[in-house]
Image (tube, rainbow, N blue to C red):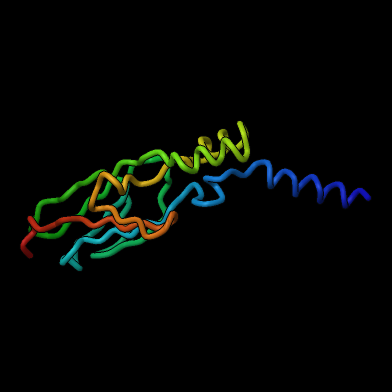
Length: 141
């Protein structure tokens, strides 16, 4: 009987402490950064080197993404991709899970996403996957 109570408690906690934003997007997203036509360009995201030409990593939804692209003989290109509020998920969280869902979404950062509607360089692939295209055309190498 005690095992059933513990299982019921854990199951109810997992349901209560989730929210729409966490279930349908999570607190992180996968971002692919592409330095178009520059396969040797070094890609840095938030100060950390990710790779050359194209790089993929997980990023926190509640923080802007700062990308730097460097290539020998060229100027460094720095670009900041801002976040935007996930209004639809926020409304569903409040309606479905009430104040607990609201607190979970805001606390985990699941209430945000990369601002793909105002920035044509950001492409939404899915709710959890975005592509960031960096225009590095000032580098002629």
